[in-house]
Image (cartoon, rainbow, N blue to C red; front, side, top):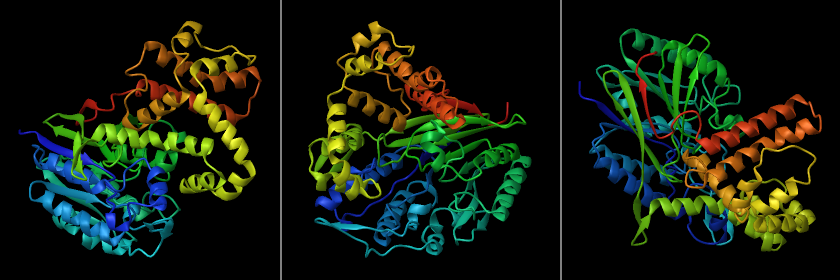
Length: 475
């Protein structure tokens, strides 16, 4: 049997330059997002060229094809998909950003943001992307939004169940009862026929990293859905949405395992393209990354550029709060969607400035001195702290952010002491609660989750997030 090779990408968020790529309004918008905007055209073109030249058999795209459902963005994204389709089979599912579910489309000119942008409705998406999925479908379900979930054959014994999970009828992502019934019946029927069913949807089933980070990215009733889908026979689920790169496994009470691959945004760090080779008995998974793209006539190092764009999320905010005036503070906070940003800047600008400047100048050594004033026992090793005493806390914050996005452990390229100090810091909330005899259930749960999150960021999690082999059948 010749292996079937798939390339999985997600969250391309195509943004057309005609919507504005200069001026203060655009700069604020761009600096508040982990993914790129102006560069999406160049990044997607480079990635599609890499994919077209590869030996993969099909490309799967797990939703949020456009920035925010702008018609011009759909038109340009479809052009790119048609060009790639000359070389590869393509199967996509759309998601909420493809029909601007928040009804806030934007273009930028100078200092102003305008909302007079034509968007595409969810009813139009079926026809727009019919050539990239439903036209080849063996079965399909039309949702109450007019979008579709569909079943397509990838090989004689491998099928793709591409799902649209935009609404479950209860205010969350997911599926209405009749839709879920069709999904479960389809999985059972195909599994009983000897097929391996691969699922693809946009939102998460599993709260990767921690519910503190990704619970809001998950489908509603996720625990019930995980159990139902795994017990129906689904072995592998491909998702996007959170913009993080992660592989986790869930085992139902009945003992059925479902592996979920959360694919990061193609237009944000680290621009992942997940390769899945399917042999007779196994899935072989490894992740490739975009190395470079052409922009403004220059060859850009994609990893260096995207990494710098991501860490500016933290540095840009701190710099503005530390050294900007009240207007700049308000504008920056507002760009992150913070309510009453103007009032916050006016009333608490001095405090924000003081705090930001302290953070910018704080090091591991200074933070440790403050921790030692607390009446608690900690897990810090003084020798390890001394080895890191001059490391800025902002460097650590950036490392943790990049670890969350990439799935690479935060201390992967650091001294062993670095990981140990981070883990000790992750234990601090629990140790403070114990020392103060705080027994509030919600607070204790929060402290436990913070510990779990820090452990996941330091280690990469229980499984390798980039290279892994799993059985096609339940073990």
